[in-house]
Image (cartoon, rainbow, N blue to C red; front, side, top):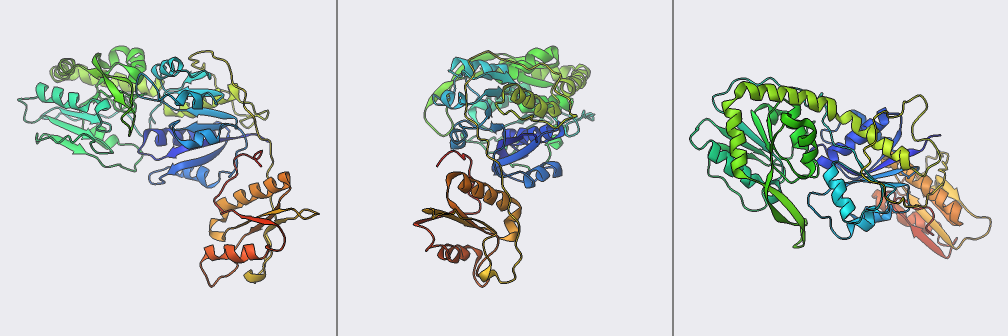
Length: 487
């Protein structure tokens, strides 16, 4: 039996983490892995049927390596410290928050999207092995696009309207470059609105702040003739999305985007930082490193080059699209993360099914620190047999485990048939947990009082066992046991 890889994180098609996490799950599944999806947040809108199938069929317990794929600041990372843990995360500054390194050092390996983030993590005290697995684009979602001739150049910016995205510098450069061009347009595609009160009185500027639950936003890239990717990024997905569709891209050659600017070379219209500004950690007044700021004059020069060299810009975009499809294909993402997991996992069972080939691309190891040793749980799942009984009020527990003697503690839970697909596995874990620790367990698979709301049935379920034990613990159906060793 193969081990199951559990992916913990956010899953939303319109979010950078959420989108890449879905492709990670799908890519691993296609590589022959049993994948369990444990969402901290899930928006099913726009998700593929393949991914939703993985969600529905995910086991409810950890049974192998865990890939935690979101911000380290969240409490769930600390709760996973005793598992076969891997962390996939990033940051957009020259320093990470002080407590992040200790959190990340619980992982067997840390996976980041760019060499810049790897360098920052190392400088800030992350000693776990660090690997660079760049983000990617789906060639079917972002194919090359032929664009018609237009009266005026349309420029696009994609990203949250926050200072670190340098959108004000982009707007200033665009207005200077096209001050006397009435047909020029600037589109700013955001998703969270603007945080510093920016309002434009230029009728040529269009701002859209909706979060679109769609497989990609190629319809925005189709409208554009050039993309400005000027933000301080941990990686910079809009950069490769725009390139994939054939847009010439003016990109800030710093931080997470520096890898693409270096590897793609002249296929990117790079601009260097002209200054650095302090970065405030999200939602706080704490300064956390610095972020680069592009020079307005440099951006203006690149915009004017695109205007004056239309044919060369089109050829550049076509070549850039081919480069991205070869070098940043998102279907490599899941298998490449899997290769890191297979390199460092402490699980003895194989991670992928027989007959699936191993990854033949070299791992991008950023450094060689000491490996941390983490405890693992080897508990098995025990399943009960469904009992049929037409009288719910007399129905015995679906699963019951009583010790030969009198155990002081009994654990009681109940779920309805409507949530059986996922609640059943949680109940199986609880029964196994009780067997391991010497508790009694009672699991009911339907309501006990049909005339009342389902939540009322927890009261008669507990009443049935008041005389059996000194203590009873009620646990809701959606409560999960993640550490079987904890008593």
